[in-house]
Length: 157
Image (cartoon, rainbow, N blue to C red; front, side, top):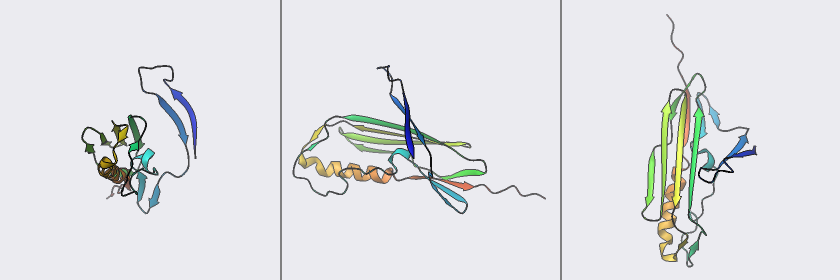
């Protein structure tokens, strides 16, 4: 479940607008010694456009260019360590769009930053293949996971 809580910087035009959402419920999957979490939290259940449709005969109008930035930090529970994480990656569609994913790990946390820039508004149908290819790569990148594994207990003599 999720519930919108409040905005930060709503009255500041020169800074990013932040929406605070309270989330509860099951976030990931527990299997034996592992916890599997969505690496890109906000994109884990997203349905991306243009992936399923193979061809298009009319122009694509997305109405406005956009930038989307997501930063998520998972705090690693005591007794666990990071076994797998989203790979730092960059998907580029020159002069049109790019997606970058950056991951940083320390003993207590995993931070993942996702930055999507779409610098187009109207695309001719002849560009649809490139648009679809970009979104297909993005769909794969967005499904990466964080895997936490239970640390081995220290052996005593």
